[in-house]
Image (cartoon, rainbow, N blue to C red; front, side):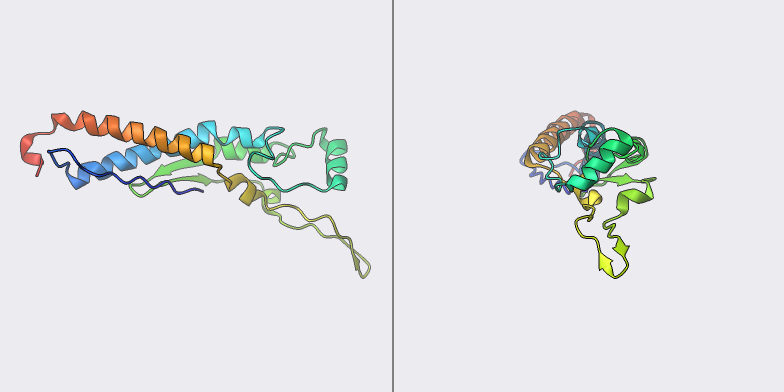
Length: 171
């Protein structure tokens, strides 16, 4: 989850009602969360993007086993259940304070952080799984800049569309 703060300074001669401004913020943040879900979640599950979102390096043994078992070594994807859940079962929510993407229905194996095996008294090392939830939540600067620009344009368009409010509703 990421937090997107947008401060709006009212410099126009007509002050907008606080309630109307909060409605505008809420709708805009809803759109930002939906845009993030639509455009920024699917690339996280594709091959070759591990460096872009700072994924931890996988163990060579793990990559060999995964390649042999499922035929690929794409990060965050084993059977595709986590990708489908993140794209189709997620809910975009927006409030006047920010945007959130709530992921539901993620498979249990997505949350495993460690799979250390014990053989007798010895522990096999090097089989530590990365924190996949943290890797999915990573947001780079380019994405934040793009989403802020999008939110600013949407808010400006909505504020400019408020000219039809009756005079008595304005203070």
